[in-house]
Amino acid sequence: MDVQRAQDILNSRDNIAVKLDGEPVWIEQVDAANGMATVQVGSRPTNTHTVGVDRLEEEKG
Image 1: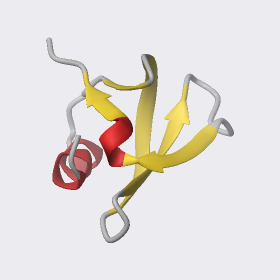
Image 2: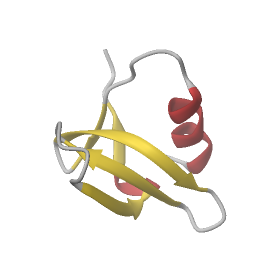
Image 3: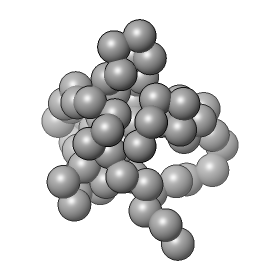
C-alpha cells in the first residue's frame, strides 16, 4: 500500500479491511513524511504498532 491510499483509508467513512502480515488491523495514524502508519492490531486499543505503509495490504472484496 502507498502512503496516499493509507491516508484515504484513514479518512474514509467506510469500513475498509486492512491487514498486516495477514492479521486484520485498523489504521490510527499516517506519517506521510516517513511512510509510516500506526495501526491497532485486533480489538485491543493498547495493541498498536508503527510500521511502514508498504507492509499494509488492503483486502480486496
